[in-house]
Length: 470
Figure (cartoon, one colour):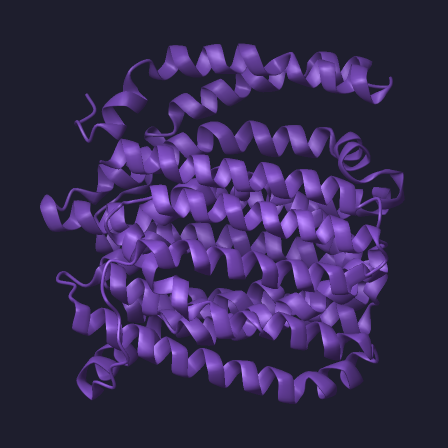
């Protein structure tokens, strides 16, 4: 079951990311950094409202031991109430948002993106319940269809001169397709249910987990919203492009397994409670891929930006390198959140995420006069603090010691050293054309895969089969 779920989930993310990457490469040559900056502000503000919309409902549906039509209908009803209300609020505030940023077009972009709130409730619960049962085939179909329509509409409209309006319309079009597909895979015959007791149960859980996720989002997006006002839309566009480049790894790898991780940890906890091994093995396989990605991205940042977006985006390279370092720090604790949530430690999770958010916001407010680079250095410090805190927290809730955790990462760390040596030809001879440079980079991949295979052999197969590692 887990192996099949992982296959469908990863296939879904790979396919969607491939489609998005192709469209991004095309769009980067049709749109300016300033236009990207304007759209980024609108999408972040709408994304901020989306956390209120979810209100922890997906996590509630996953964690519930018994699921029936009554609970599913109550969750849908509550999400409809919240989503429709948020749509109205966003439209009402769109004029003020545009005035604050002194960008009149922001009003219309926010209004267009708000339409998604009228659609999402009718597909979100079906997707969550499929995740709960580790049934990822419908999600694969929905995500690929949505990504294809989004990309096709975006490229067509931007090429036709609709600029960021085209991006907004494409986003809503993709959401509509996602909802239509997932509606074909409903687990229950939903009906509106105003069950006060169910609302209370969902609200109790959602206020903590949903509120915590919202706070984490604020910490992640505050700087970009701040930069749009006080640093400029062009600088925001460059930073946003660098950030999206770093998150390629998340979109390709982490997002592929993310829908499975919480249900997997929750299931492991229900069945045998041995979360230490599950957490260590999950992190180990991610580290195998994250370390070479981060080093390769750091070393070849200029070539990567030129290939993906063109030379007009080269000013984003310094931001990209620093964001890679921050991301690398976070990779060692990338699944910690899921462990905490799956075990029901919602109060600890709230404290854990809120503190990080406060620190990140403080970095922005204190360091932004010294430049974007200084802000990112502050974030790197916060990421290192997060890693230390994660070790303390996991020791407390699942009994994972620091020594055992890093002992489980010995093989990926050794493999990474071999990969670093393999990069020497690129470092020495990379002052050539893009084709030659990427050819030198690609030469490192077969050797690294061979070392990784030698280190693990049947380990991944045992892990996916839920068999104990020797």
